[in-house]
Length: 144
Image 1 (cartoon, one colour):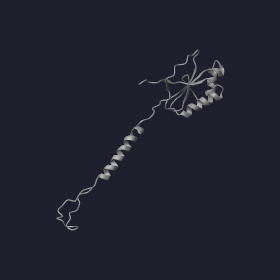
Image 2 (cartoon, one colour):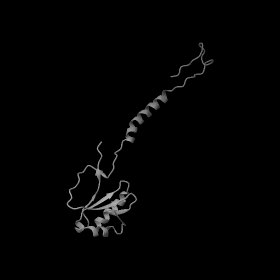
Image 3 (cartoon, helix red, strand yellow):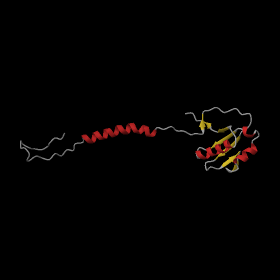
Image 4 (cartoon, helix red, strand yellow):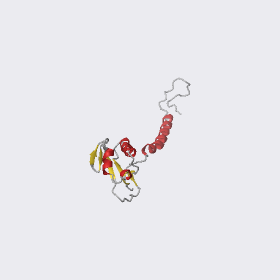
């Protein structure tokens, strides 16, 4: 509450000096509420689940034969065993390399910055052609 300063000498209403104080109590209340809101909200904004989909803790699968590897590059370009292919020739190129036919194991290596849809299109094309043993290649996750 404000306190009048000045000399009023018992006079009521006249000759009073103006109150020169600013009441900061409401401002302090607002600032404390904002402080609490930001203290609660700040950790929620910075906390997240950092995921890098190509990393996994899964153990490597034992292989009897070397699988065919299809690579999806960041710009969506495709290659099989390092040789560039187009989406139209993908299935025929895989069929030419597949010794066991549609039972051949296929690996799709998708770059972390490649569009998810591009990787799913490749897997859809291969699955639609009858290949059921399709896997995604990952790297071991970094341990903290």
